[in-house]
Amino acid sequence: MRLFTLTAFGAMAMALGAAAADKWDMPMGYAASNFHSETGAEFAQCVTTGTGGELEIETHPGGSLFKGNEIYRAVRTGQTQIGERLMSAHQNDNILYGFDSIPFLATSFEDSEKLWQAAKPVLTKTMADEGLHLLYAVPWPPQGLYFKKEVNSVADMEGVKFRSYNSATARIAELAGMIPVQIEAAEISQAFATGVADSMISSGSTGYDRKVWESLTHFYEVDAWLPRNYVFVNMGSWNGLSDEIRNVVNGCAALAEYAGNARSRHYTQFTLSELARNGMSVGRASDQMTNELRGFGEIMTAEWLENAGAVGQEIVDSFRAMQ
Ligand code: PCA
Image 1 (cartoon, rainbow, N blue to C red):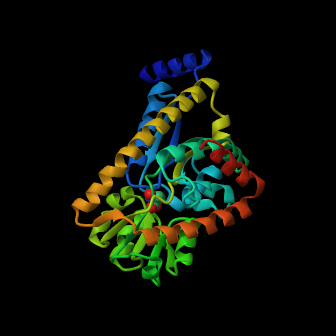
Image 2: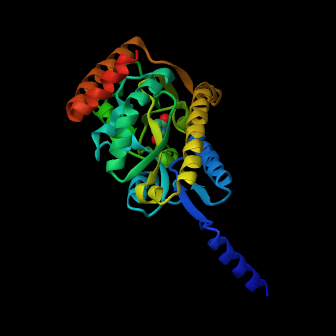
Image 3: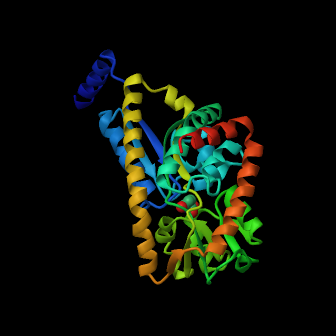
């Protein structure tokens, strides 16, 4: 009898044109407690609630469903419908993904936002060409340098094993005479503890999340750039949604981008204070080190522009026009 009632109800709902509920899995590369993951969880909840459960999104942080470096491919190939990734890690696939990691082009939250507005139309198209619908992007706090010793100049960096997370970070290591080793954030605590790496460029946020004070001693504020995490959807999955559902997803994405930005700003000071509270020396890099790094920035900006061609130049020009 109960079965009959449910079946009858189901038939009635179908007759009324109600869409079947859909469930999406959203892999995320960083720890559940990280602010990007918290923002993603709120985004997922917003969509689930806003669509009355017609589209349910479940987040899988910390690389638990796919590891950070597998997420881009998993979403592109339809192994999952939606995901979050640091796109600059895929600069080898498309040079344009590296626009947010050009040293000293945009070094504050204000400039990072302008650079993002300048790049967004191009990035949306680039990702669409790869079969991805871009939903939102949130910056990490400004990038600084972590070491296991006092460092006052590039000469002090010679031969140090440096954890990289994209092409730009590997190139900095190379220019400074360090040895780059590409490691996902989820694995860095172990890499530092076992001596696989002794330094990195990252935010206070990642140092705090991974408790790097257990192995490293110095953080130098450099504000080299603010790379972004992107949330994107497999194009086929996106095209399969009704207009009503897409409107809800877009609304939730806009809220998430706003909230993520606010969290990132707040985290900047909070996490630097936490590094210091846990015994690390935290402060601005010396003038010499800053000037030397800015020199690398000039080299790397020229290299990026040369590889990115007219489209890259367009992004940088429209960003500079906003200054
Ligand atoms: N944390 C990420 C990317 C940039 C950042 O601040 C990481 O270190 O992997």
